[in-house]
Image (cartoon, rainbow over all chains, first blue to last red; front, side, top):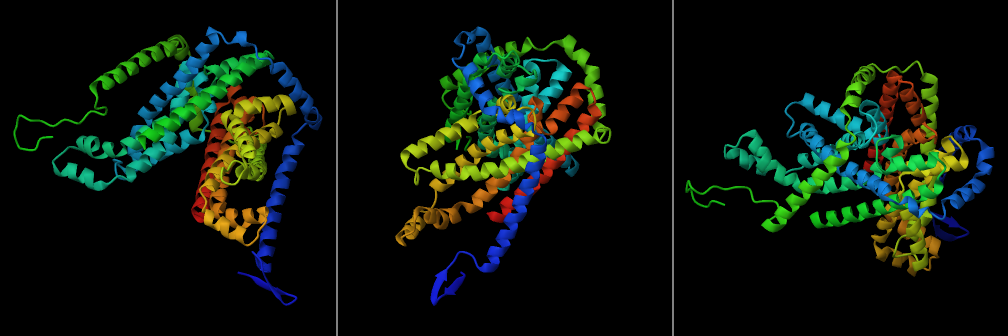
Length: 271
Length: 270
């Protein structure tokens, strides 16, 4: 601990002088990077629009309130149902696709290292690309609608589920699968009775967790035409019907809160 | 389970749900939901459209395996630069602004009204998907990276503040008491007793959020909020799938690098 003597009294300070200089230099470097980044953003910004922003914001709120409650009809509720279906079926599809990928990616269950690298590549690729991009691609291939949304959410979920699942598989207790092998069980039987029971809790927790994330994501993939409430949102905004958009905002808020609550409850019950 | 070697008794796996009534109710409920969900998506499966889209899909995939990095290199460079600058600025500003909210949302150190206020802000900032918030800011401040940067900054505040508040609630109170006993003021108490306990997690979360912000910045361009997403969407609507493939490859590469860096930082501080 650095202690300095000033006028005969010993004073404790958090940092020595040398440490102070180093931290000042680090801060200077950080701040100049931030300043440089900001200058790029600033150059791309139309500042006259920004000056107008408070007025625009107030105008937006004025248009949003009161929400047009008559918009909340059967058609909109169908969109909410579509959103939940996209999230749920997308999660199921993600689980189905991710499970084999996870077994290929785990060091202790992979049939061959080549499979392992392919599986790891699938995990990285599906995880890095956002579901909106997947939705854009799939709407192009399959046509707009819920179906493209389900596939987009499913594909996007692979990386997340497979990554956490293969880490769980690598951490299993090998004694149990050895014991099953010793009874003369086939590879498939070892998997069913030795490995799967050990990763079941992780699997269940992951599926609820991913479902929660997928509800959030399926509310927005409609923005690019993949069905659900996002589609209603972008239609309302493009038509400047902000009093309808505010209803959709309220619905998204409630949907996300419910899914978060359900997943918190379910995870508490499992763990 | 069979305890003796009697050939007649066989063992079978115990069912997941022990109570047979509940088990059947669950099975029927799942079946009913599956049928309803299938009817929902069935209406949007259009075989004619899918077969029409098939040649396009093939073209898309063949273009993906031979990405073209050079034709639109200028647009791609600007897009990537915008995404990175948005990420850096929004993470830095968001993390700084998150500090007061983290303190305010910790039940053990904040007075009740401050606590409720901070929690409301956190819930609002966390609940709405970034892209929806970006839509609003594009309307307010115009197209460009500023709208995206503001969006990501707000999301960062909610994310960091929520997780940091949880960490602050778990700190060792005896250290706080010890510092208070020396006659420290409130800011001194925060700097010398709380900060040292939560700093590692704070740095780790910042690195993690940097990673998330880049991923998000790559798509906000779809609604006009700046970054590589705009170039991505343009390339798709122009059917330049070789360029799309190149952009996706760049996004994956940057995400990988960021993930390695943030993983390294998190390992170092823990």
